[in-house]
View (cartoon, rainbow, N blue to C red):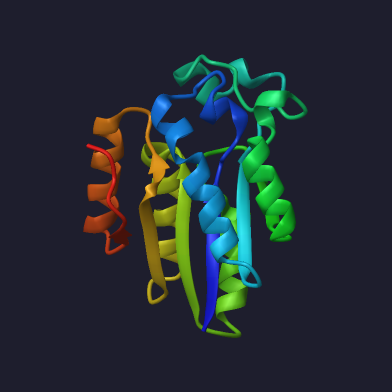
Length: 180
Protein backbone atom coordinates (compact mmCIF):
# COMPACT_ATOMS: atom_id res chain seq x y z
CA UNK A 1 0.00 0.00 0.00
CA UNK A 2 1.32 3.44 -0.94
CA UNK A 3 0.40 6.34 1.36
CA UNK A 4 -0.18 9.63 -0.44
CA UNK A 5 -0.58 13.10 1.05
CA UNK A 6 -2.28 15.69 -1.15
CA UNK A 7 -1.72 19.29 0.01
CA UNK A 8 -4.30 21.55 -1.59
CA UNK A 9 -3.50 25.20 -2.40
CA UNK A 10 -1.47 26.21 0.67
CA UNK A 11 -0.61 29.48 -1.07
CA UNK A 12 -0.06 32.93 0.38
CA UNK A 13 -3.24 34.43 -1.11
CA UNK A 14 -5.32 31.80 0.71
CA UNK A 15 -3.33 31.96 3.95
CA UNK A 16 -2.91 35.67 4.66
CA UNK A 17 -3.27 37.37 1.30
CA UNK A 18 -6.21 38.40 -0.87
CA UNK A 19 -8.47 35.58 0.38
CA UNK A 20 -6.71 34.73 3.64
CA UNK A 21 -8.47 34.01 6.92
CA UNK A 22 -7.46 33.53 10.53
CA UNK A 23 -8.58 29.90 10.22
CA UNK A 24 -6.22 29.38 7.26
CA UNK A 25 -3.35 30.94 9.17
CA UNK A 26 -4.11 28.67 12.12
CA UNK A 27 -3.58 25.44 10.14
CA UNK A 28 -0.18 26.28 8.61
CA UNK A 29 1.96 24.65 11.30
CA UNK A 30 -0.28 21.56 11.36
CA UNK A 31 -0.04 21.21 7.58
CA UNK A 32 3.76 21.56 7.73
CA UNK A 33 3.86 18.89 10.45
CA UNK A 34 1.66 16.57 8.39
CA UNK A 35 4.02 16.95 5.41
CA UNK A 36 6.92 15.99 7.70
CA UNK A 37 4.91 12.95 8.85
CA UNK A 38 4.92 11.71 5.24
CA UNK A 39 8.72 11.76 4.96
CA UNK A 40 9.80 9.13 2.46
CA UNK A 41 6.27 8.74 1.10
CA UNK A 42 4.50 10.42 -1.80
CA UNK A 43 3.55 14.06 -1.23
CA UNK A 44 1.60 15.93 -3.89
CA UNK A 45 0.67 19.61 -3.80
CA UNK A 46 -1.71 21.62 -5.94
CA UNK A 47 -1.42 25.30 -6.78
CA UNK A 48 -4.36 27.44 -7.76
CA UNK A 49 -2.92 29.17 -10.82
CA UNK A 50 -4.46 32.10 -12.65
CA UNK A 51 -3.27 34.46 -15.35
CA UNK A 52 -3.45 38.25 -15.56
CA UNK A 53 -6.83 37.93 -17.31
CA UNK A 54 -8.39 36.30 -14.23
CA UNK A 55 -11.18 38.89 -13.95
CA UNK A 56 -12.36 37.93 -17.47
CA UNK A 57 -12.77 34.25 -16.58
CA UNK A 58 -15.91 32.58 -15.29
CA UNK A 59 -14.34 32.26 -11.85
CA UNK A 60 -13.28 35.92 -11.90
CA UNK A 61 -16.81 37.03 -12.69
CA UNK A 62 -18.17 34.96 -9.77
CA UNK A 63 -15.31 35.68 -7.35
CA UNK A 64 -14.04 39.12 -8.36
CA UNK A 65 -10.93 39.03 -6.18
CA UNK A 66 -7.70 38.58 -8.13
CA UNK A 67 -5.67 35.86 -6.43
CA UNK A 68 -2.97 33.29 -7.14
CA UNK A 69 -1.81 35.11 -10.27
CA UNK A 70 1.16 33.06 -11.49
CA UNK A 71 4.47 34.67 -10.61
CA UNK A 72 3.14 36.82 -7.76
CA UNK A 73 3.92 36.42 -4.05
CA UNK A 74 0.27 35.44 -3.47
CA UNK A 75 0.65 32.52 -5.89
CA UNK A 76 3.61 31.08 -3.99
CA UNK A 77 3.29 28.54 -1.21
CA UNK A 78 3.50 29.91 2.32
CA UNK A 79 7.15 29.95 3.42
CA UNK A 80 6.93 27.14 5.99
CA UNK A 81 4.87 25.01 3.59
CA UNK A 82 7.29 25.65 0.70
CA UNK A 83 10.23 24.49 2.83
CA UNK A 84 8.49 21.27 3.83
CA UNK A 85 7.26 20.53 0.31
CA UNK A 86 10.79 20.96 -1.00
CA UNK A 87 12.20 18.61 1.64
CA UNK A 88 9.48 16.08 0.78
CA UNK A 89 10.31 16.38 -2.93
CA UNK A 90 6.61 16.95 -3.53
CA UNK A 91 5.12 16.57 -6.98
CA UNK A 92 3.39 19.87 -7.84
CA UNK A 93 0.30 20.28 -10.00
CA UNK A 94 -0.80 23.74 -11.13
CA UNK A 95 -4.52 23.98 -11.75
CA UNK A 96 -6.61 26.75 -13.34
CA UNK A 97 -9.84 25.64 -11.64
CA UNK A 98 -10.94 24.14 -8.34
CA UNK A 99 -10.08 20.49 -9.03
CA UNK A 100 -6.96 19.09 -10.67
CA UNK A 101 -7.83 16.58 -13.36
CA UNK A 102 -4.11 16.15 -14.04
CA UNK A 103 -3.45 15.18 -10.41
CA UNK A 104 -6.44 12.80 -10.40
CA UNK A 105 -5.19 11.14 -13.59
CA UNK A 106 -1.68 10.81 -12.11
CA UNK A 107 -3.10 9.08 -9.01
CA UNK A 108 -5.36 6.90 -11.17
CA UNK A 109 -2.29 5.68 -13.09
CA UNK A 110 -0.47 4.95 -9.81
CA UNK A 111 -3.50 3.07 -8.50
CA UNK A 112 -3.31 0.74 -11.49
CA UNK A 113 0.08 -0.46 -10.18
CA UNK A 114 -0.48 -0.51 -6.42
CA UNK A 115 -3.11 0.15 -3.79
CA UNK A 116 -3.22 3.76 -2.58
CA UNK A 117 -4.34 5.38 0.65
CA UNK A 118 -4.86 9.11 0.07
CA UNK A 119 -5.12 11.91 2.64
CA UNK A 120 -6.11 15.44 1.64
CA UNK A 121 -5.35 18.61 3.59
CA UNK A 122 -5.29 22.31 2.77
CA UNK A 123 -7.37 25.22 1.53
CA UNK A 124 -10.17 25.96 1.06
CA UNK A 125 -12.23 23.09 2.46
CA UNK A 126 -15.42 24.34 0.83
CA UNK A 127 -14.01 24.98 -2.65
CA UNK A 128 -10.79 23.24 -3.70
CA UNK A 129 -10.51 20.52 -1.05
CA UNK A 130 -14.07 19.30 -1.64
CA UNK A 131 -13.63 19.57 -5.43
CA UNK A 132 -10.46 17.47 -5.40
CA UNK A 133 -11.89 14.97 -2.91
CA UNK A 134 -14.97 14.36 -5.05
CA UNK A 135 -12.90 14.22 -8.23
CA UNK A 136 -10.64 11.58 -6.67
CA UNK A 137 -13.62 9.66 -5.26
CA UNK A 138 -15.18 9.54 -8.72
CA UNK A 139 -11.90 8.49 -10.36
CA UNK A 140 -10.87 6.03 -7.63
CA UNK A 141 -14.10 4.83 -5.96
CA UNK A 142 -12.46 1.91 -4.12
CA UNK A 143 -9.41 3.84 -2.89
CA UNK A 144 -9.31 4.82 0.78
CA UNK A 145 -9.72 8.60 0.74
CA UNK A 146 -9.45 10.71 3.88
CA UNK A 147 -9.71 14.43 4.59
CA UNK A 148 -7.93 15.59 7.72
CA UNK A 149 -10.26 18.32 9.00
CA UNK A 150 -7.78 19.75 11.49
CA UNK A 151 -5.47 20.56 8.57
CA UNK A 152 -8.16 22.27 6.47
CA UNK A 153 -9.87 25.63 6.62
CA UNK A 154 -12.80 27.01 4.68
CA UNK A 155 -13.86 30.43 3.51
CA UNK A 156 -16.02 30.56 6.64
CA UNK A 157 -16.32 28.14 9.57
CA UNK A 158 -19.88 27.37 8.45
CA UNK A 159 -18.95 26.55 4.86
CA UNK A 160 -16.00 24.47 6.14
CA UNK A 161 -18.42 22.33 8.17
CA UNK A 162 -20.86 22.07 5.25
CA UNK A 163 -18.06 20.83 2.95
CA UNK A 164 -16.94 18.25 5.52
CA UNK A 165 -20.51 16.97 5.72
CA UNK A 166 -20.79 16.84 1.93
CA UNK A 167 -17.59 14.82 1.65
CA UNK A 168 -18.68 12.49 4.45
CA UNK A 169 -21.98 11.88 2.65
CA UNK A 170 -19.97 10.96 -0.47
CA UNK A 171 -18.03 8.30 1.48
CA UNK A 172 -14.87 10.33 2.07
CA UNK A 173 -13.59 9.61 5.57
CA UNK A 174 -13.26 12.73 7.72
CA UNK A 175 -10.66 12.59 10.49
CA UNK A 176 -9.27 15.13 12.94
CA UNK A 177 -11.08 17.49 15.26
CA UNK A 178 -11.83 20.75 13.55
CA UNK A 179 -12.89 24.21 14.63
CA UNK A 180 -16.59 24.97 15.05
